[in-house]
Length: 483
Image (tube, rainbow, N blue to C red; front, side):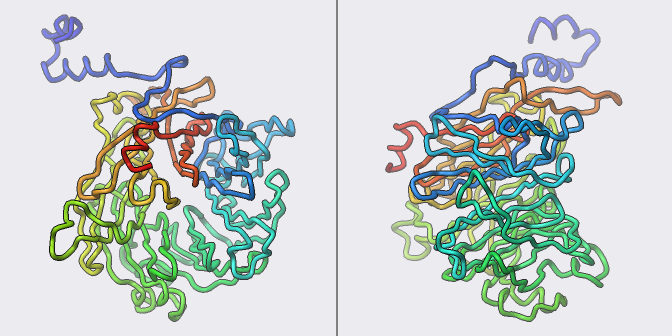
């Protein structure tokens, strides 16, 4: 027992004493402290003009690699940060950064978004396709699909990433947008929107963006009970879809964030070609199955991992190869005032009978993360499937526990092989909780979303205004996964 506990044992219970001791010894971050890391190394960093960051997309353009990074809205203290390139105060939008030399990223352009604070403005989401991939795109053009706050989706010509030009805009009295998906080989886009009349904040609008200058709507889609004119309880809102493309003919939808999670497996062909009127029957028709998760957790990211060979099963007569889905929940509440949000692996080999078979979380006691401040728990994973990591390693953010590298070669037994918790800076904004009616604020890193590029670099962006950290696995760790 600590000296502090010994002093107060006459007035505190033993249990309360230990809680106090843990709080005193919590490892809060301080400015000047180094990053915490195991088997991951910092390569480069950019402060992103001290804007709260959400989705990074890294695209190989000719002989350059360009990062397109979506932002949350500003804060009450700084609703419109100053863009040092222009000297103008601008609402948060999209940062465009040249990461060709990951040691020295170069900030090229800030594309302002919608007016608003936090989740209510800016331009959170980014996806990028080449016109050479899109069936009807200009072959010499690179296209950025982004959200414009909660009211629109936009397509920009970013062939010259330092001089974006608006191509088209999809709007229509939307009440929200979020984590969309764009198939570059077909042009089909699954846009997370809040369409007028729908009884949920977020659902899917399916568009043909094969010609980015002329978007064509295919249909609205969601769970029965969310559509206009329905009644009764409203099913959990959508968070985001991931399409496995026309060859696999599947789209995977994740509903919920930190509660009421639902995984929906959908026949892509039936979704695109079926009747578009959002009746209960038409909404149900493309569905192959649902997996209802515990009410305590959500489904921020639903990443398909198809045709995975399972080394442990190599001598079995059946089932040596499995179809899996990785489910990543999202923590929403500071200082662990919710159920633990974590990573789950579901076996969907028999699609009509999906089942969760394993999970992963960060050991809270390894860093006293519930006491550090801000959110602790999972949020998002990389989604790009480049060969260097595909079906071998995934990277998942855990807010104040940084980013975690997880070996998934045996998804029945995932294991951590590295982590990186960035250092905070003067720009890192505090996160507060109410204690007896008053704010108690702490400053901690809030690693938000993560992506990789085809060279093996890992890009982690921070929700608390600390920028983008460009990382790599150590050489020994890369060797251990066959690289």
